[in-house]
Length: 90
Image (cartoon, rainbow, N blue to C red; front, side):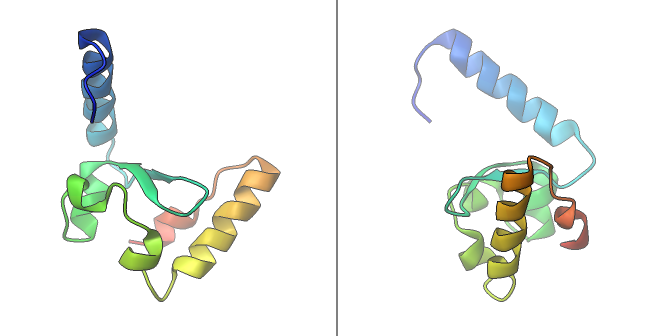
């Protein structure tokens, strides 16, 4: 992560605390199905650290299921509704 300013660094730290405080698996991905951010619980569910999954494609992490996840996510984006598929990934 680049250090743009102390204020932005503090906001990133705050976001990390919020994400890691939620008792659920949280990750969000870009249009190419790469994990942009994840919380500790999601990473630990895969036996990895947050740093090890952020930036990686779900095609790497879930090779057998990634195409379906990507399809489901794409449908959610076009319908503007969140996917609840993550609850079945645990």
